Length: 139
Image 1 (cartoon, one colour):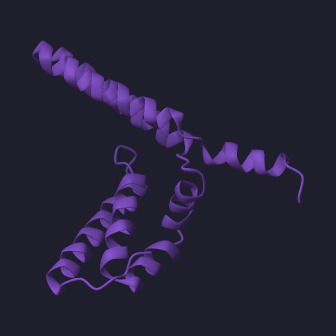
Image 2 (image 1 turned 180 degrees about the vertical axis):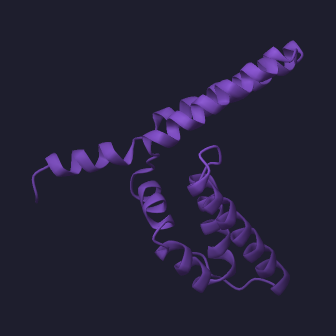
């Protein structure tokens, strides 16, 4: 954790960023169209720079802890989040195409979405990591 001295203004800005991102992460727990993990990662990053207490609070939250733990321990993204992310990228691109977006925009966004989808799908799922750990003999 990075808790070095920062100016009061920087600490306040990081705290607001952390609280706002945690709020959006909370919305993502309830609404399936809003991602949770990216907002929680930003919240934790900003909290680490503003307040050790806020960082501990985010890490120990019963809803946030499993998502953050999965990411920190294995860079894992839940399967449901992968499907939702890739599906929404496809839906967004299709809507742009349907409404007649210019070709340069469709190509640009298509390339970005393909890179994003590749990254998301290349991450392990927490479920797979857990099963793999259960199969491995104890040392």
